[in-house]
View 1 (tube, rainbow, N blue to C red):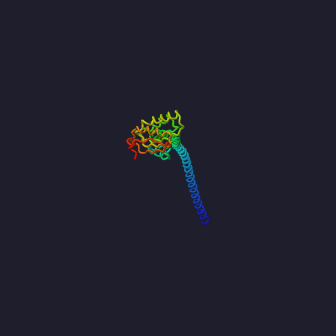
View 2: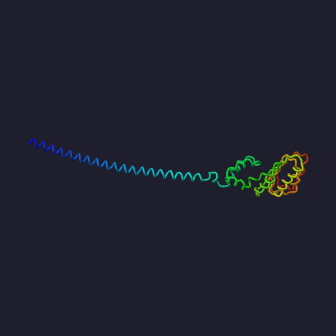
View 3: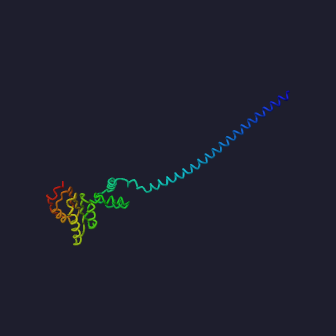
Length: 229
């Protein structure tokens, strides 16, 4: 009788063990399947990440290309503001040539901005090195803007130099109504300049300065320069 109880107990224990083992195998299968699903998900995720990285690089390359084609920030400024910035680069209004020469060499837009702005071409100099062609071009570019005339023509007397001086003045005379300032500084031809302006009407003249080496300077006609303060 005792042995029967032992056998029954052993059988029940064996069944319980088998049940636990079966459950353990079942759980192991679940974990294996879960691992397989996770690995497949990870594989798909890796592929998605790789595809996304490729798309990201392509989009970044496109943006870089568009940025490289985009004009510099300063060239996106309105022309009026760009012109104002260039004006601030000119320290001496009598000598704008050097800074303007550097500016027009930067880009076509900068060059067009300077060439089409009359205010950059209003400082007119009558010197022995002034070229007639350049003077005509400068007057044309100045449009209808007021002109500042600087006469500094120190040249040993000769028929050739006197003829050139006459030619320069004759080019300026038709624009006399636009003369805003007339500065004669040490010119050996001061008398000739004054003789010229004495027969002109200068309605826009606001500044007249004569510093001549000549001992005798003709009197100015007050009716012609009455607009000078």
